[in-house]
Length: 464
Image (cartoon, rainbow, N blue to C red; front, side, top):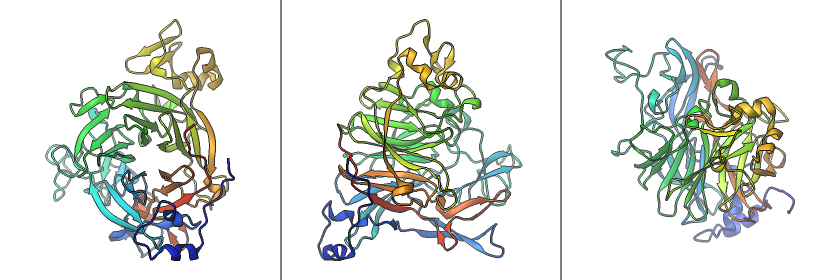
């Protein structure tokens, strides 16, 4: 494999192609400069007090197209990018743990972008996500039986977000506002027919949207959900809250969805949710057949925040921590190449004296969930039962090669056989601060974080 370097194209090359009417796939790589190029944004609010800067307000930026990205199947110079659920920050409020939602009616959305000949990025259009009736959704929590984890949505004043925003919270007459169509959107697939699949961190839900953003199908672990076309195995309901299905991909033949969980599941309890074990799930879109595979992270508590296909069984996966490189020289922002051809499909293992399939907990090994078994016995103990995780090989260390400055590496775009683009989630340019407050999110003292595209070249992205 060639040495891993940031693709560098001189400004003279950039200007030389700027007079042409359209970019070729190679010319599109002018974006690959070490500083990256920030996606466009606008300011939603600028009147929120900044908890860490006395007397100042912060900018709540309507950008945040960094939860995931996907190639436009019809134009090599265009890509789609997905927002998060909306601006939010952790809170321990009067009515339990939850999130502050400065703009609780925010609608998660997909942006359609194009790389221009001058190296800038243009937002072509925005697709708001909608429910099955065509009404825009929110990022507010679901009810308990359809993905909710008991999280309470709060306003900036510390009061719950309510059904009637003009009236104070009243458990009986004006209860907390929840949204069974609400998504904490994280994974994105764009199909050649113009439709999209989006996965989220909470359900975890995988939702099919038409070209206008209207829901036309859904997959999750809740058998009582009448919206579902297929169901995930029940153990996926034991996802760690806020660390569900962070990444989503589709096979090259567009017949199979591939999702990866961000972190270990609480299967069966929270004692297992901080391990180095994550699960990959495959869903055949024609039959609903499920496959399950294990991914061995580099260390406990890491995040797998993206997955994209190289072929039908080979993928690239983001594995990261939540650190900033300028605060910790050991911050991890890696992309791995993985292969499922020799990995064990947990769904296909036959039952015997040691292995059983439990309806609620999935594969059991000597009476323990996979998470419990690895926690107690280590990964090597799986081999005696013929269980192998996905093979993984480091593709690129972004902290080393491009000094990746952001905390949340999440979006990924396989451009061709040797180039990959990445985006960060900028959290709408805000961060939690102090007790139940928010502050501006800075990369450096004079640089506010923003969703930024970087392109890395000289990679081996061919299916083998």
